[in-house]
Structure formats: structure tokens, C-alpha cells
Length: 138
Image 1 (cartoon, rainbow, N blue to C red):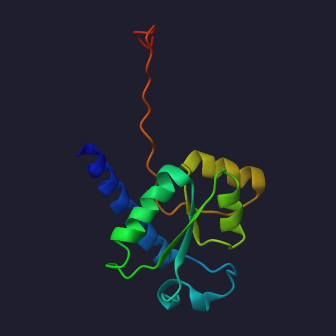
Image 2 (cartoon, helix red, strand yellow):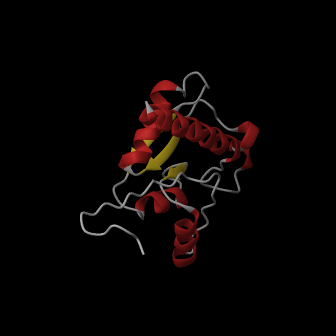
């Protein structure tokens, strides 16, 4: 039950992200204003790069269960590293990516002279620490 609630909440957040990206997205050529905002071609799929788990899983849940009702065509491209989704986004191979937190994005932009902007915060995975020996984090 708890897992279903997390998936549903994550899917809703992802749907909001996807809708925000659709409304605020730009084409690969920023000088081309005819394809952005209200004039965007909604017949094309929103292509989002994502790490396989959990981000692509979340997006595929949205694609399967929520996107059609919202009139969203969603294509998910999975990447198994943390550089290619950003370079693909920067050069226009994908419309957006979903895998990183703000500090990583800021550092990536600085080190690579890229111009990727955050549209919404990405959830952070819960972290569990387990030990048979250590009883206290102190």
C-alpha cells in the first residue's frame, strides 16, 4: 500500500513536471519562437531522458496511466550514466531530462558550460543505513 502511494505521488509530480515542460519548453534553436509555449506542436511527443530506476519507471507509469487523459504524448529514453542525459538535453536530442537534483545540475552547467534550467524539483530517494555492528550514527 505504501509503495502504491509513493508511486502515485511520484507519478503526479512527474505529470506536473511534464506539463510544465510542455508549456515552458524551447526548441533546440532558441531563435525559433514559433515552436514554443502556446504555439508548440502538441502532436509531437515530449521526449524525456531518464535514469532507468526509478525515474524511467515513474515516467513510464505516467505514460501508461496518466498521459493520455491529459493529452500528453510522452516518450521515455533511458540512459545509464549521468552525463548523456544532460548533453542530449543541451543539444536538443531530447526535450527534457528527469534524474538529477539541483546541486548536480548547477555543477554540471558550470563545468560543461551548458545552459540547462530546472523546471521543477526532482524527488530525492530515501536513504536507509543498516548495520549489525553499528547501533548509533554518532
